[in-house]
Length: 85
Image (cartoon, rainbow, N blue to C red; front, side, top):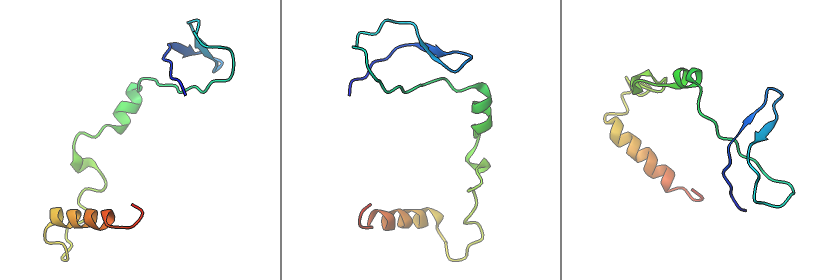
């Protein structure tokens, strides 16, 4: 597969408009569209601190985990040691 980067836009009707004559023969192509994140999306998904994540503190109060860092490393070791991983 050959990659070619060109610029264009999506019309109000949802059609892709490319402003360049492409140096490739006519035929079917696969298109991957990259677009900048909108400010809404950036604000909605931005995390200022890890403490804002819902997973933060899930091990708090567990009597069976004395060292959370070591516990996390052990979980990783177990996953890496599985067959097929």
